[in-house]
Length: 358
Length: 204
Image (cartoon, rainbow over all chains, first blue to last red):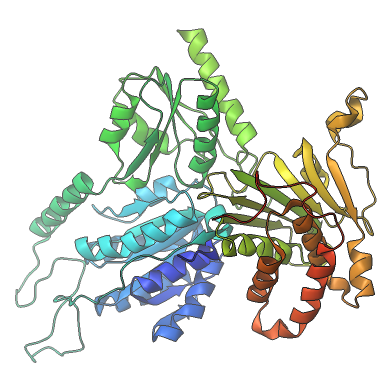
């Protein structure tokens, strides 16, 4: 068993290539840049292609083309770059292509963007938010698997800390075996009898017209199935908790640490983390919140995931936000909230408010 | 058990390299490790800090810590934030050739009744030793060697191997000088003077 020291961005690219990713296109932007650089180092060596595109829009367009050939392919950016990609993200989802997106966000302010999206029409994609580099490796492997399984995009939501922290990681996944994709285009021309059609409007080869209603309804059924089966969740110390603290991604690592510390001092506080932001693990969270007096959401933004937490507990327990906007001077999301002393203070205040109000 | 090591210096002193070597050496000895470097810009003279966390099990601590078990101080210019994270019993190994500042923590400076609450300071003239070796840029490795000897957080063999593994192909000409820097550093502080682990030796 050998653990290799790798920065998050390097570990992600390594896991993706091991999972069979053979095409990557992106445009540099902190803290995503090193993800692109690491794909650039790794893909040529295995016969793959990595392109530094001239823009994020071009990058996702190139990846769209690679996916249509049946290749495992990925793109990525920060929330800023993903804002440019929204039209393509929604179209790729309707074209039912297994895109993987590595989103190295500048903090947690892109939760709405990741889980709701800004593209047109009814579309959803799976979003995983790893807590550390080791989990990012596992979720990267899973992302390519789930994307192929559902023929639907999957996003990994990371941040500066995930991309730049180094950890000893292991790569234990089974070697990737390419799966034949009977829908992929292979260059055959119309009239050859072998050509295929991949498009985002439900056009069937051979039919004279499109049928958007039945196509969109079929996609809805698929998204309902994903929602019912792909939620992922972690929790600790919820049994007799009076306060449940919910957090995601890198911030959850600080919260989990503080909750363990408070538990060891006898405080009745629990911890819950959605690993998948969509589907949101509503049932598991509602179960964890049962019996608590309050749910506190600690996210590094003005309050976005708190909507999903409220929709999960459906008024059965009050939900309060105890996080907030927090950034460094460069806007990379490395703000003063990323401090266990600060987070401990927020959670202790929530516990004290509980005592005052009950 | 997890042990935190915070490093501070100025850009160009190889602070990030020393942190990387320490983390990699810990993995070679079978432990778990995590590190996060932070720096203001890729330039000489700017702030450069790193936090390394080493443990017997997968690291649960966040990569930004609020207090530290130990520190390696290459320069005083940007050391204030680190100083505030020292615990009363923290182990601090200092590059005494360049360091020009007070070691007292905020608490010990204001509370004269608790002189024992001053971190345990170990001075090593790392830049002088490295300069005498003809390898002034190896000062951080001298300090790292001294730190390893004192704490036995990692052994010398693992450090040497981790250094070789960390040097890129276009810098191979420095491997020999870096080995000497680590070895001389290792000789410059008393062995196991401030042990990191309950029993001396490496992880199983």
